[in-house]
Length: 480
Image: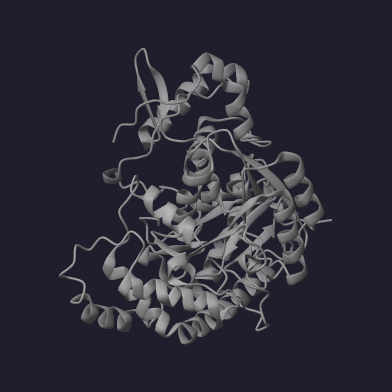
C-alpha cells in the first residue's frame, strides 16, 4: 500500500505534537519512533504527511541526526514511514499482510491478546439472530424492486418516527433519512450546510470522528470547554454570539466522552440561545438510549427549537455491524439531503434496514437488557479502578458507555503507547481534543465483559509504572 505525499509538517509543529516524548529518560530512537507511531494511530499525523528533513528535525528536537536516522529506520521497518531519494520521507500505515497489530484505536487488534478499550462499542444483543431470521422472510418482498432506497425503507422510517413521537417529538416518516451510521449522517449535513473555512462550534472534549469530519471539509472548529458538571451555557452562548458559527455540533445526551446529560432547564436555555443567534445545531443522539438513571428523560432538543437537526445511530443501542443511522429534520431539509446524497451514495443496505426494523419491534426489551448489562459492567470497571488505580478521578456517568478519567499527570498519550505494549489499547485524552490538549485525561469504556475489564485495568495499572520519564509514581501519586 503506497500513499502519495500531501501536506508537509514543519519541525516545530511536529515537536509541538510530540510534547515531552521522552520525559526524564535519555532520548532514544525507540522512544521517538513509538511517539511518532502513536501520533499516526491517534489520527494526528495522517498518512501521506511529508516529514521534515533529517537536519531540520534533529535541530527542532535537539537531538543528533544519527538518532533521527535510526528513528526513520525503525518507522520504515514497522511500515509507518516510507522514503524515496529526492522526495524525503512521509507517513504511511502498515500493509495488512505485514501482520502488524497496531492499526489504530478504531480498528480491532489483530492480536486476540490485546484488550481494546479504545472503542466504546458493545457487542450484538442476543435478539439480533431472531431479528435476522424475521428479516430474511421479509426480504422476498423487496427482491422485485431495484433495491435503491435513498430515503431509507418506509418500514424503518415509520418505526424511527414512532420512537421520536413516543419521546415527545412528533415526527413523520417524511422527516427521517436513513444513513450509514451517525458519522455518515453528520458528514452529509456538513456537506449540505458548511463551506471550507466556516466555523463550527463544538464542545471540548468532543467525539473524535466529528473532528475528523470537520477537518475533511476544512471547517474551523470553535471549541467551548466543558466544566466539571457539564456545560457552561453562559460561555457557550457568548461563543455563539461572538463567533457566529455556521453550525454547532452538540451531544447533550450522555456526552461523549464525559457521559453527562444536559438537564431540561439547560436545554431550554440552549434552545433560546440557538434561536437568538440564528444558529443551526446538529444534535448527536447516538447514546440517548443508554440511560442508566431510571428517571424520566428531559425533552429532545428538537422539541424545543426548529434550529436542531437530530442524528442518531443503531451502533450503541443495538450493534455497530448494522452500520445504520438516521437524520431527523424538517421534511424540506430531508428532501434536500436526498438530492445532495446522490453525490456520495445511493442509499443504505436493504437487508440491514429490515433487521433494524425488526429489532425496533422489540426495542424496549432489547434496550432494557442493554442498560442492565451496562450498569453491571460500569460497576465492574469502577471497582477495578478503585482497586488498581485508586487515585484516578472520575465521575460515574448517568448514561453512555465510558468513564472519563483524570489520571493526574499530562501523560495520557505516552501511557497509551506503553499500554499497547502491555496488551491493552486505550484512547488518550488528546484524541478528543481540538488542539491536542487534554493529556491529563483518558476515556475507559465499559463495553467488554467483566473479566476482560478487570484484566484490562490490571494491565493498564502495570503500564503506568513504565511510562517514559514517569517512574512508578507519576500516575499513582495522590491527586491534589
